Image 1 (cartoon, rainbow, N blue to C red):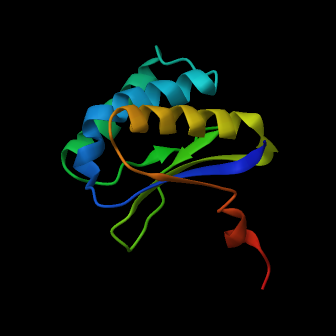
Image 2 (cartoon, rainbow, N blue to C red):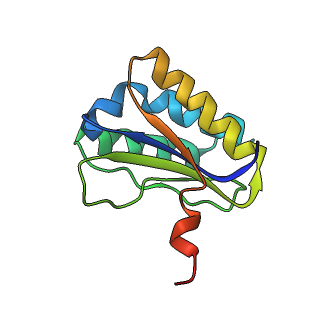
Image 3 (cartoon, rainbow, N blue to C red):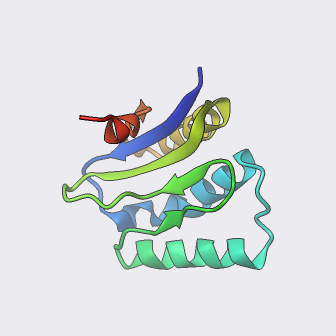
Length: 125
C-alpha cells in the first residue's frame, strides 16, 4: 500500500497527554524518514515540541525539506490529529504511520488511522 498522507486521529485526550510518548514518536519519524536525530536542529525541534506539549499546546510539527513531513494541523474541534505527508504516494508514509500507531497501541492510546485524507483539501470544487 502507498499513500500521500497518513493521519493519526486521537479523541478524548489533551495535547499534554502526548508528552510521555512524543520523544518516541519523534524518534520513529526521524528514523523512518532517514533523518539525523543527532543534529542540533533535531534536538531543538524535539525540545520545542516537548515544551509545547507539556504546556498543553499544539506542537508546530516539521515541514522540513525532507521527503516526509510531520504536521499538526490547526483544528477547531477537540480532536488531536497529526499526519505524515509526502507529495507523491509512497510506502514511507504508510511505514511511519503504522510504526507510530503500534507505539500508541502499546502505550494504550486509542486512535484511528486514515490515509490520503489530505487529498480532499486539494480537490477542485
